[in-house]
Amino acid sequence: QVQLVESGGGLVQAGGSLRLSCAASGRTFTVYHMGWFRQAPGKEREFVAGITYSGGSASYADSVKGRFTISRDNAESTVYLQMNSLKPEDTAVYYCNAVVYGSDTYWGQGTQVTVSS
View 1: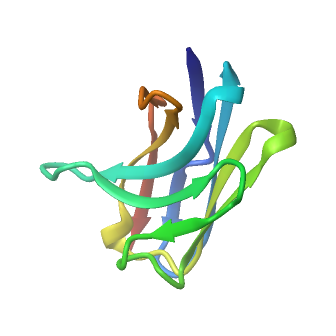
View 2: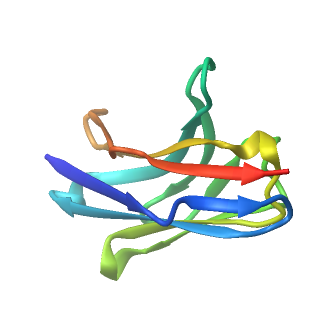
């Protein structure tokens, strides 16, 4: 089992920045990929960014490329999402995701990000 706890959400004006954190605990040695997803009201949950836990290879949704950066601190079992140049359309609940060997997937409880225009 892997437990994920997100933090860092909040209210920010358009053009501002936030940094989300996702702290993993439990059997973190089984994790090979972590990512961030988001879900806006009335919309499907969508992929935002992901990173391999060992090699650090990152991927991003087109909508956030050049604005968001995902990184990891393996010593702290934590993944970060630095969000710059935020737009109102980035408003959503952001969820941390971990995929372990064997393909089980774990989710955090989510953190609200609200960007005002």
